[in-house]
Length: 280
Image (cartoon, rainbow, N blue to C red):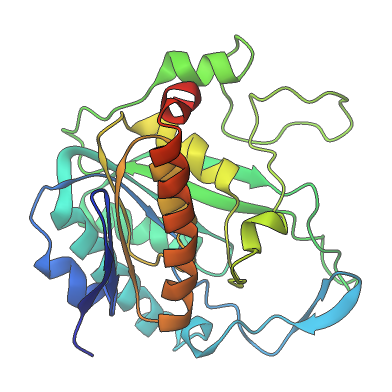
C-alpha cells in the first residue's frame, strides 16, 4: 500500500498507510514525543461485557496474533522506526496489556531506549469479567521511555505536581476505597459518548489520558506523533495543548473520524485561541 497524505492543516498531518511505510519518509530526529497504541494481539474469539451485553473481544484482523516471534519482530521493527524520528532528547509512550506489553518493554531495551516509568492507567468503569475465572481486567500499562541513556528527557515536574494537588504525581493507582481520590494517580474513565460522537474506535483512549501524557513530556509548539492514530485522540489532545501533530493509520474509515474530530478541535481553537493558554 502506497502511503499518502490524507489530511493536512497548519498544525496537523494525517497519513493513510502502514506506519512502517510512512515513518521512513519522516525526517530523522524531528519528533519530540510519540504516543503509540499498537495492536494488543488479544482478538482470540473470546467474550467481554459492553453496556450490559456479552460481545466479542475481537477488534479486527489487525489485532490478531501472528505468533509470539512474528509479533515481537513487528514490535521491534516499528519501535526501531520510531526511534529514528525521535529527537535525541525525545520520549515515547506505548500502551498495552499483558498480551503485548512485555514484548514492547523487551524490544525497547534491545533497541537502546531508556525506560523511565511504567504507568498504571486504572479504569474505574472497566467491563466485568464474565467467565469468573480471572481477576477483572481493570487497567492498562503505559511505558514511558527516552530515546537513549544519554537523553536529557523533558518532564514538566512542577505542572504534574500542580495537577496532583501539590504532591508528586504517582505512576499507579493506589486505593479504590479512598473517597475524593486526588489527581496524583492515573484513574481515568474510558472515553465518554461525547468523545465518540463522530464514530467509534474499538481501542479508543480517553482525551484526559493523552492530555496528561502530552503535558507531562512536551512544551507548546512541540511535535507529537502517533503511528497507530485510529480516531486521533492523540491529535485532539495535541491541538488542545498547542502542539503540532502527525498521525498514521491504514484504515480510511478511522481516518475520516479523525478528520472530523481534528477539524472540530482546530475550529474551537481558531475561534477561541485563549483555550490553549487556559489548558496549558
